Length: 419
Length: 117
Ligand SMILES: [Fe+2]
Image (cartoon, rainbow over all chains, first blue to last red):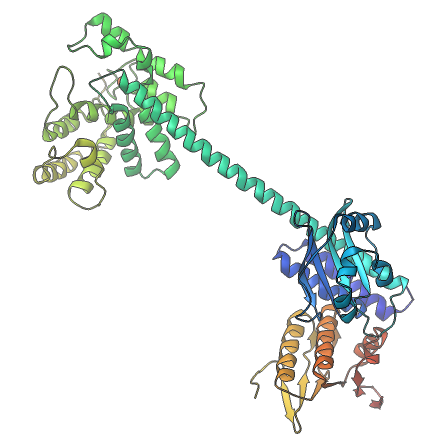
């Protein structure tokens, strides 16, 4: 570079500026526009444009142009030969005379000549064509000298890297989107599988058709009432759907017995929580507590449940929720040996057993959810759909729920009555 | 009539206008001044005078915007004059060959004001 301090400082300032532009993370198009200003301004080049190369479309697409006029084409198709020749040429200024050998230059010769395009710089990064810079005449009207070409190459290299980085980012975003879709599909598959399992479980028991699905829904309602986030609520539903999965290996005749089962049969049936746990444990669930819900859903907070006789906080929270949902569904549906009880009786039962079988805070949450629906505070008709029409008399249910919530007020934090 | 506060413009007789360039000609001020000048040209102004008396510094981006104004004037067949450049700015424009392309009226000199044309 000629030892001229002004020019040197001016060029240096442009080079420093371009480094900063590429590093800054604002909009890509803006970065390219500013880069073009820096390039043109550093050597007082009257006009020019920066295009990125779209390999699939085989074309240059201009991102920034200055003083090229409205009639300048913003996308220029290029041939495979052009792509190869430009890549071979590497990152250097190709003067118009030489550039005439390229097909796209010939095809656009008249417009390039009219716009006084004097220099073409292929942007090559890692032996890959990522774009091109077209430059017009210098303000002085003088030809480009070797120093100019050095400066142009230095700035162009930065611009090329900027475009390359952007390409990588687009590719990453595309992959992330692809993964997101795959994950979504997997989730759909997972949910379908869960539903299929629930149906399989219930199909073993001809009297409790839809039991697992309802328990899943009641569990979800309680989780929602507790203010869990969407993902956890979905997970809670899954835990409910699958709580009885162990029944798949229990003899069908025991499950379907139209009488109260005997001790041997009862022992056989009481294995289903542990069997369920074994089945669910090796599966990767989006919600980790699913196997625990199966294992402990017959535990009672007073410690008189099975299989381990855990009490109070020893019982995993999700299992306490499923236990309440399970019992509620058992009481509100007909069983082989008994007709379902009235809604009022069921609610009374929940209150009586708060602190014995059930976690009182969960009874409160559950009753709150019911009250919200039956008093018309929410438009959701979930309980009505699950319990069937005509079962709940809201004029009786609403005051009863209010009374029970009032009675339980302050007891939800009470210690569990261990046996 | 164009109504713009920045950059300051003074209208002369005969479709001429003086536009005062800001203290630092860079991206934001360059963007503003180019827009204003294009607007004047579209409204048929025949002569644009860019007054650099306030301008201490011009960076590469500022130069690029100036080239845009030069090109626009050439396309519109309007005259462009740069005036009251400080020595640094003048030297830069001269080194870049801009003074070969556009008329420079005055530069501010410590001792006297030189008339270059
Ligand atoms: Fe069960």
